Image 1: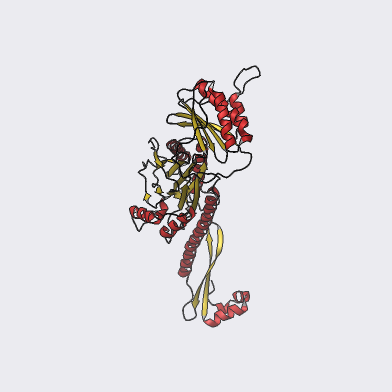
Image 2 (image 1 turned 135 degrees about the horizontal axis):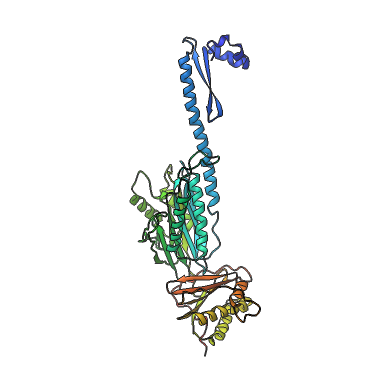
Length: 483
């Protein structure tokens, strides 16, 4: 503290020209207080008093110190919050998909917009599945900040892992429900400060919502299930918009409650729009109004998914978003009869030879003569296993996509098990050969049994042709009945 700056040579010596201007302006006394918070010096604050007033007193110096201490804490909180927000945004973007994976079922566009006040746990995904199918996922973790972003990353990784099991949407959500419950139990209730963050305690992920949908371009069917998430929007080619009556289900983390699925048949060039609640919810309007605004924004035919995303956000984006927004727009494609052929197979080992001949003719028609031998070998093993160990009708299906997809379905729920035969074993090598020749293979369970599938790489990458408009025409038999 300096009572009279004209008698403070040390202060004047710091910057003679500037200090002379201060004195000439009429300033008489000065109090300098450091801005210190949590052991860190952030700066200093100066309190000036003009010459016509009395110098500072001790009570005023104490008040200045209290004001500086409070200001320092506020500045430090803002600095730490800004750093944590930047870290959360960076983490969020690093955990979200950056591009749509290659697939032939959907044309997809997406948007993600973080909230201005704090990053949440919104996420989305596009996951290719066996059989040319594609899964669309959108979810929202309760809360904001680094913890919500990190929990989102755990759930997104879990969704990918569960999707490799080729489970139906309701079972996927059941597994996620168990995972969120375990996350809550594993987190310490006392919490710990986030290293390098804003000191916010780590608390359990109190819940999350999710919508999981699987679209099949062969059957044009889309199977959906949701856990406390807003309903999807389905836009028909003529521009009409519907919000399917999809059972809501409880949010993830409650445990013990079932999830239900709904199945829709979609026309070619329909749009499926998935989003998080930040798009439709606003403190200034009811959620029903938000849904009607979304309906109006979507009810325009002939747009691409990119145009849908852009125009929806232009119509509905708040001036200051209070929550994250994730949006996916997917336009459906159809793999028509020219790309899909199927046939029933008699439950007779003698029928395998006829199947092989029919497969060879079909592949030559598709220009895939180079993979005919491999396809015959793989299908012979799969069909022979079905004849020997399965029950009921057996059906063969070939799908010409980015790879050649071979599927054998039956009514048994027993899955084949890959084992390694010893040199003295007479059998047990069939599935081993399938695993060696196929890019991937696996089992998908259905309501009426199971499907054993294998994907064979094509000699050269081939883009699928435009889907045939006559999607309802019955496919030509791939395999003639043996005489």
